[in-house]
Length: 481
Ligand SMILES: *[C@@H]1O[C@H](CO)[C@@H](O)[C@H](O)[C@H]1NC(C)=O
Ligand SMILES: *[C@@H]1O[C@H](CO)[C@@H](O)[C@H](O)[C@H]1NC(C)=O
Ligand SMILES: *[C@@H]1O[C@H](CO)[C@@H](O)[C@H](O)[C@H]1NC(C)=O
Ligand SMILES: *[C@@H]1O[C@H](CO)[C@@H](O)[C@H](O)[C@H]1NC(C)=O
Ligand SMILES: *[C@@H]1O[C@H](CO)[C@@H](O)[C@H](O)[C@H]1NC(C)=O
Image (cartoon, rainbow, N blue to C red; front, side, top):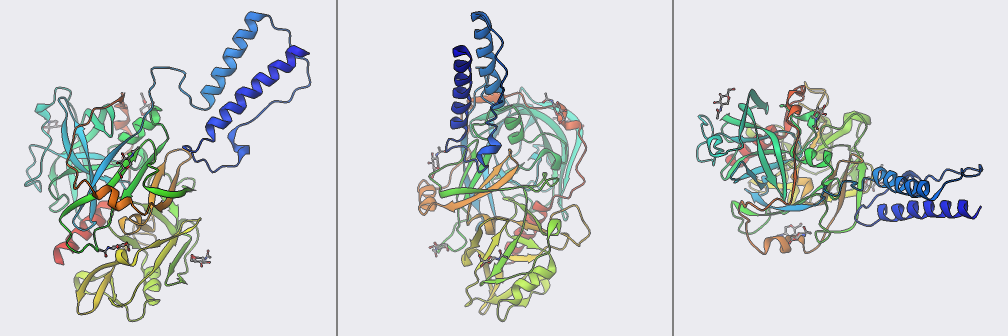
């Protein structure tokens, strides 16, 4: 009986230790303790007799089972890590890019970091269309380059990038993926990229990718090398700065952890609705403007994509109209501003959004996109007509871009699939702008995974790549202004 009691307490000790580790602050789990798997089988049977050797084996097995269950690597060669990438804010918060390194020897490229799509692509040294002045990827300079000889194209409504698929080593934030599949594009629509940007890295889920290839973040997550299954963004604001430059420090992208110096309080995670994991999808549950609630349909008619690659916020016509109806003297835009609304610049507009949890305010400085005529300002929320009720029923009703994301610390969590928000630390912007605009750099990768080459045969996604459609729209808007 003594033996039995000892065994139970030993097992309990292991379970409790695992539970404590799991509840450590870095994991910030929000589930109730009952979901953590503290399952102690209660059995009244007498334990079978074990000799010393059996006890040793049993103990070892219990430990391995637990470590396996909670994801602690049993293979000591598996190294987990996290890293970060300093971002650049291009053209008054229009887009945010970071750097990656591709090939052998590695060459650094600036790419837009886009949670609203899932393909990585770069402009090709052979580019013939739309690549003037852009730094291009040169396949012949990389000894590890493989041509997959499959066509690649990603369509963005009014434009596209096209070329072929290839495989090479891609490094980012201290991680390296040996067989990353990406597009090498020799045709790029005019205005899609502005130098020094050379391409785009999609940070959505593999099911969203046009090529079917596994995105870099997901290869790292699947190979269990991230300290935590998260990617996090802090984005700076320069739209209201007194003398903004074309390029300004853009914030920090962290892969494999969050950066506690950039936010305060808890991260509130909200689950992606089941069946909606492709974009980083959340339901919009409450939208207020100067304290008036806009009435919203329920269910998938109010799904939003949380999208770092979109500058503004697009939503269904009727809800956008009722939002502006709460702003006195607002008016629907015409001509180039069709789909936008104007309002008196003297009005302070306070919009807040909630996705099932707390309400997050959008600064009136972000809502006020630009002054377009005497006293009339353009609002940053516009009608996005291919959303719910439009021609494409597979896409989310709303696209929530940087206008919102500048106001929160945002975390994209693979497991459980969710998006989290926290309040930005008061000194975040001064801490990241102190060192000026970062340049593309080649760090050393401390953790390397093989990646998944075979994923490229998967089904191409039928979903349109809205993100950059909006990116193009807003970029052209800035050309008008
Ligand atoms: C890769 O293959 C495609 C055809 O599939 C071809 O057009 C392209 O020139 C090739 N690139 C290189 C660098 O060989
Ligand atoms: C820009 O907006 C932020 C948030 O509203 C504010 O804290 C900051 O002081 C503003 N900067 C300028 C130069 O007005
Ligand atoms: C919507 O948000 C506002 C502002 O935070 C709050 O006052 C209101 O109670 C919320 N409404 C609902 C239905 O949650
Ligand atoms: C957090 O971000 C700051 C930039 O404000 C950076 O200097 C620091 O190294 C980051 N810390 C980690 C652990 O990534
Ligand atoms: C690669 O991806 C495919 C499709 O997603 C999957 O079936 C396969 O198991 C993966 N292979 C590796 C080595 O991860």
